[in-house]
Length: 318
Length: 224
Image (cartoon, rainbow over the protein chains, first blue to last red):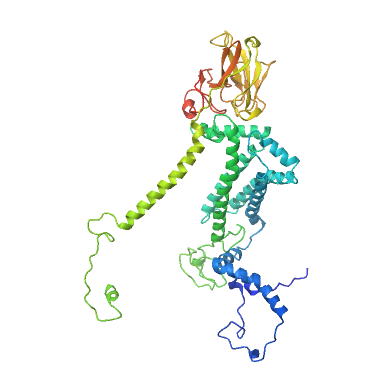
């Protein structure tokens, strides 16, 4: 396979840490010497060329204007160019896949809400209308319906990956807890969404689901009354489920996904358990080596140059 | 170190007037709270009251249906002569109003008999809602049993559980006779000894200690 040449990016879009330092003598380097050709009269550009230059620089100028006010470059650089451990593989995409499934649910859900009527007498007819008469309605409804199962499957696979790779351990326990809350909220979405078509399956599945809730001792009976908004599944039950499905849980999910991803970027990801830590290049006394590896490809208690940092090997000062 | 701090630009040490230092720091004589502390507490309290003023009514609005009992509803299901002692007649009536056919429910009605019931000559209306998870049971004439299609719950002629996962007998509806018509009313549950108690949801035990573990809900009607 022929190796493709790396495209040259304009300096303005490359984050500062990765920019090549300007050559001494070029413009904008105060310490360099003045370019030798400065004395010669520069070529006069035509009006067309000047317009072209202006056009080329306009998007970068606009980006710069925004960035000067947001100071987002540092954050985006840290997030997008962060280091990942050796051995990172396709299993690590399960979280992003779940996020993508959620985005699909959110987008298709918004468009379904344009045609759906959350009323016990009209819900079934409005779903039939979406499926049979609205152009591409069946597709959008199908994406939402099957996508919900996809999201539940992906979130469990993501959870399994985290568990089997030991990625829930210190210092990532809080992220595991947030993830479990996200799992519960996803199941809540799946449960409340099931009633909305209001056909026979929705109706009986929701009755069974609410009754399972009711079997919890002491609070169970009140919980089912709360879910149904009364002693029997009635007209308010549907609007209640609709409000939970549409407004309450999605907001909570979006907020928690934000926290989840913040922690992923902040703490970094783990290497798979089969990736062994690298030995330092310079030999060190055995007594300091057996302090153990921390899985980051570094041996605790040593800097990259092999100089011992602290004898306890607690891994914090590497 | 403190001496160094008192020097101004390395000048000769001048006698500095001893300032009155409050003890504890930040407090002046006779004060139990600093001004800052008072305002912190006050603004947090006012903020808390304002937040409660918004959150409490909203939560109450969502939770209120738990404590609301609807109007008692009676519906005629047929003339007295339609019902006999030794088999059930299936009737359909509206239990929840406002949601069309979804609010209808099925009951099996018979005349009470001296052999099975305490008071003969009245009417017994057995709900078709399975006491396991709420699926609809049907009365099988040949077996004289109620059978649930979902998880295989079986009830005898009276509605007592004789097999499968249900936790109690089938619910019943109150009955009365008005102008020669049998009318069915609010739902109630029964214990394994067929004693009426307030309506419970399917899956909840009745009788004994279970009356406390699955407390009666304010949204249900008292049993007959």
